[in-house]
Length: 189
Length: 353
Image (cartoon, one colour):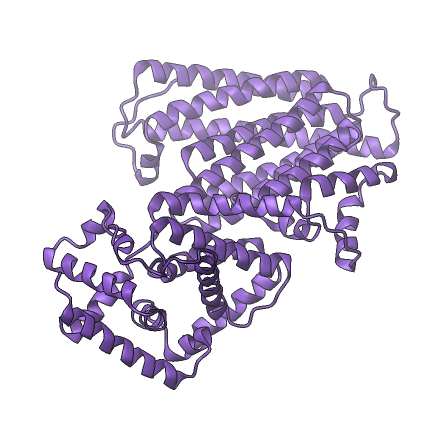
């Protein structure tokens, strides 16, 4: 994140800590898509992704406005909360796999609006393929791919979220890409 | 698929977003969840911040009703620490309903008509400030436009509440004068908001605000009339009340002057507009008749002030305002924005008075 963005984040955090009620709505609008996407690839259905996304923001609200907790790194806090909520979700549903391949393929992205974006058949085919691969990756690889290549976060930011060193992030990212290539070359879709 | 294509596909996945209908509903649902959470939370804390919050709400409350206010606030507001945030919230925010409930509670516990009228004025001013904030943040958002409409309508309602109180005629002269001054400053603020907003406000919001302005002007005149210390009034003629009375008379004169200028402005604009717009014969004759009627009423009002027949002014002012509105409507019909582009009238129609 550039210096200006960092400064803006600090200012924003100060507003949250000062219990500015507009700040929470701004936080929601800014992070909604990111957190939704992060959860979307981990769960089975769109509805689960939506419910868990709401839960993330409720927890964040509780922590800041109700418990008056302090946050030093907003980005990291939100993603960590999302990870914890998804973990809790699967723990509470013992016996189910984190991603069941067929359910994950239930045309989640194939609604009319998103089809408009992918008007070329080739693009659409590739898109489906990559999304399917993400769903069958191990979680450790999937998270790196989402944060680094989809959301465009830096290694430093990812290390703060996943609480790993930057070098570990780089190594894991490399391995994730290798794995994806391997799966793509084997899959026939 | 090569690496370049793979990374390109990753970027495409960024287009995955929540469903539009869920996105629109989700924040509202979250607000309800939070409001329910606050309501269920029963927190009793003796931290200094809570005492400070209560002091602020209770400072204008009579001591005997303070315990009722405390209980009412816990009942409707839930978590005490949310109160401070609620006070700063804007429409659409999850704490805004809490803020409104607290205001209603304060209104319900306000003792007499004078204080209720004063409180209604404070609320109207507060809503104007909220509207200014919403307008600043507006960027074509439909939701924010609707919020602006709601607030504009609330401003109109608050002013109407004051109007009803003033109309009942059971508030003291001193309070009438204060209300008149307060209405004058609120009218100015609302007019500034309308001017600053340019095209950001919807026509519904602008209509509500214009109605609020008209209502405030009319009520202001009535309040001024009721504040004047006449020989027939039951209030004793103290030097303060006489001072206020002479100020009220001066203010009345200035209001009549302003109404005169307004009618002249509308008529001038109509004449200019006629050079580019073909007005119907009916509209021309209506405009002429209405303008004459307004001039006559204004002259009568000036005479009434000189002869201390102040009741006549109240009667006339409400007629004048509705006639001015009629003149504006005729003018707006013919796209008054073209007037600004006019430098020289081309084939202006002749008007005879």
